[in-house]
Image (cartoon, rainbow, N blue to C red):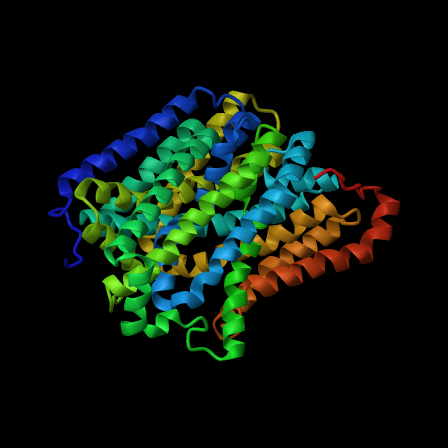
Length: 495
């Protein structure tokens, strides 16, 4: 079947499915809006999330369309050599849930921190607002690039599925996300991400199984690939040993980004109790294994079923169109939009919190009622959403270049600092500042220089250098900090 998803194919069914999906998202926003009556509720759901919502929403919000389109396309292009992203991502999940989630939940609750800048400022008892400002600048820069790029991805997806041009579809998709985020705040985002995460895993599992069955199972798949595409089964991808290890470490290094993503970390801060974290670990790992295992399987099957694709990321929608019944195909294709929307809503609430909470209510105007703070927060979401939408319409290529930096920039800036503050007894404010600046700066320099393509993925060196900066500067300044401010804080020994 030729790949040409337009309004003439699936038009009626997919339109109905998408409309029902939008109604569900807006319904969640309206229901949760009645609970968004305080800053803690609006930005952190009053720390009430249960295990399933915490786990699925945190994983879904971290992946975007990359989990649905990018990983499948990567395996289609690179074959078995690309599978290292699976342990890389799962290790990232495991590190977050096993070593970070409970401590961050507990410490943020004790300090009444609503955002990551809140947490850092409270931890170091910083009265200068320097930590908050640096954090906000990094978060805002990375998140706005991310949100603008996700809006552009919505436009491309609408164009591919519905035949609607991007200058029409971007405002439509952006309006839906902005509206339910404005209504219910973080609680709406968490619940919509939960639903969208379930749609994502359903689509990938269903499609990969159908593709495998159509080839006669694993035996048929490997027989076909060994005969017609033997390079797909090459574990090194026709690379030298050095080139392969660089490629492998780069994919494993993706996991280093997870401890530094504010839109993931705030899910742990919002978890209800320790039991949520314990159960959430296994739910998150199960979700990740299903999603990434299915994407690897679909990418391999795609070589046998749809050889010669010009764009490997077209494999997912092409397979859904060709292999699934109309209704199921409509639901699966909606999963692409769900993947994008789950991430962009999480990112826009974090970007809004950086402006409305961390800057306006903490630094500019502290004497406001809860109603005023919520109003300011909703207006901030609206303005930021409109700004990102305009940027995505006018500067799509620039935004997509910058979004390549966002994951690495956030991961390297915040990951080492967060982990050190939760486990080390000797981290200073100067060390934290040095770590954030080093992580963000190294990411930019490494990417601009082209070393990401010629040597190794920028997150690996940026994370390592940021960690070294936190440790080194803290050791250098610890005696002075202890004598003058007494802010060195004992790490909590409980896991």
